[in-house]
Length: 113
Length: 114
Image (tube, rainbow over all chains, first blue to last red; front, side):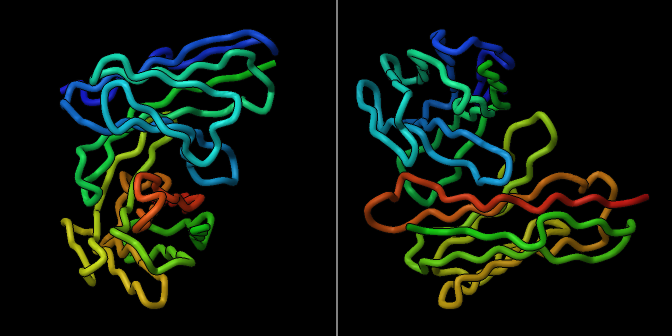
């Protein structure tokens, strides 16, 4: 049971470089989410998607873009990485019902130098 | 904006002790509250989910309670084991606008000493 898979697991970027984080889920979930986790702060929602072809901003969307071209994939892009984007990024998915549980990937640790 | 606080930030107990982790939130208009476990370098695993209409949920040695009116939840762990060592996070899902956003606390890092 793969669940939610994130790639890559680790990445180091230089300021100004771009990259894309990939999230894939095999549970046929409608909703997908990208969070970031920083020391001393709770996880914060960056962007989310309620279905294929739709995305919406979360709490901290600036500097990130997302795409959901296929139901099972949710991509998070950094066009011009900044040191402030050094963080651990988590993807999650859930069914449409707001009472349901979010299932998380193992995370991507990103360092921007 | 919903604020979620977890106290203490870290807790160390000898094996076999019963313990309580605390979570408080500022806005009582919630769909549910979840407790998660996070192991170092790993993702989050959902432990218990309490609907807003419920007072408590139990799973094995874990019992979570919810007092929505006072904005508090507790996670009770009975007969702690070294394998319980992890960071425990609580998260609330608000009602209305922002219902797709989980608000997380910063977690309590638990160490159970053999």
